[in-house]
Length: 273
Image (cartoon, rainbow, N blue to C red; front, side, top):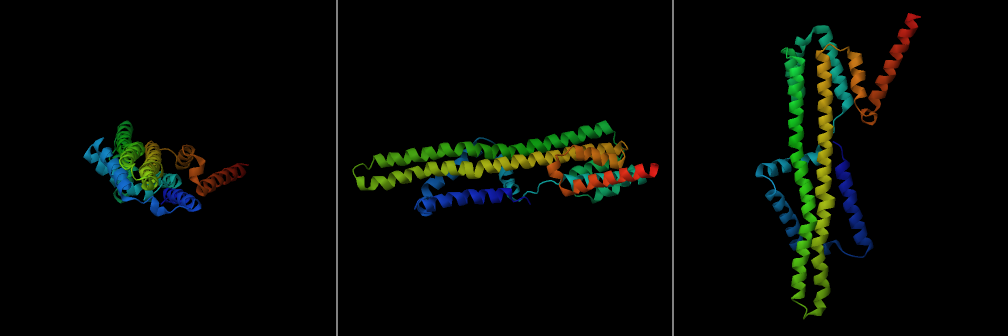
């Protein structure tokens, strides 16, 4: 699990708490039920109104992934594909049928099963590209939903402030209470801005980034298994796949692999000499 979202939100709310404390205010002054119910309730409601009920359910089912979703590890994917290529090279493509039954990733399982069944390379590419496109389109639904909540939140907060200020104007005859009432009125605007920038938009951005990383991993797997099917040499396949991935996402294993490749090359040169 990548803790970036949890750490970021804790730091954001912690900074807000620090400001409130340094200003000599109290958190309880912001935790008012009426504006919070309006902002959160109405924001989610208009988000539902802007889509379908199935989109709404899918979006909230995706919510835990924003906090606990695992980020792909490209180097592990590359190592797995290279091992499969070595097995296919020594035992034949039919041997991959056993791996297809054992692998947990449904995308890789589909690819290996089709290779073992003798599916044509171009047909397999079309099938895998369609699966990637469908997965990407599905992920966009939740991203769009939470992004829309980030747009609605501030406006609904302003609505709450206008409603509260209307109530203030009705009580001009009691000037002693105007200060607290005006302060309370602006709490709705605060929660509208806070919910958008501290909750909804970060969740949307996080889900979008996870979707991009998962699509990249699926593309990496697709290119790997298609090259495997074409009979690509395992070491060359590993180098090609590593070239498709940004260096900072590979980590130490990639460095070790590069050093091992260089050492093997040096040994071959010495043997030839």
